[in-house]
Image (cartoon, rainbow, N blue to C red; front, top):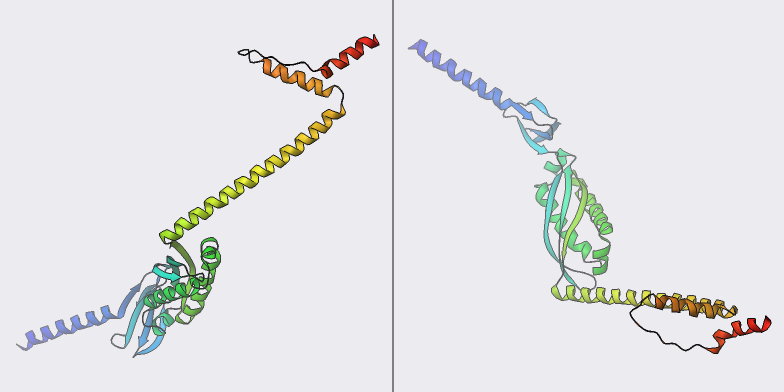
Length: 255
């Protein structure tokens, strides 16, 4: 009986040792870091690979170092010119200091998400609708700087913020469509008036040029007749002005 009891004792001891060794081994992936607490106090940050900790004494928490793409839920925002819009965005950030991300804030993912929502409402509430639609790059940069500055104590680096969609009320969409149509009509009228002005200037210059030459008007008249005569499906009757025959009469007198 003594031998059997000793046998079971060694089996239990061996199993206990295996459990202790297994609990002391940690494997961290390339994009992970392990934050180690020893007896409740921060000890170190371990890199990727096979790592050993002291069982029971040490506690390790894994933190991902990869960039996180987080959707900012649609926010109801009133712009500075009192227009109600619905805006959503996407936030790109990553953990650069795993110890701060675990110690300084309870849940850095939730905290960053809430901070992005409040910052989005705060920043867009200070701009007008036209600026929101036409100057998104500047607004995105402003949001990124604000979020990066506020998340820095948490060990989080905000690399980019992009406004994805701006949902306007139906009435505002119709008003903007009418405005765009009126703008297109204004440009069309300006282009037409500019063309008329240039044409009138060209015609005035041509008239002055023709009037300075004695036979230019007659040649232009004959050229017009030649152009009309190319179409043989009609009969043309036109009076011959005396002025047209004057050069020929003067030439005969000279002969």
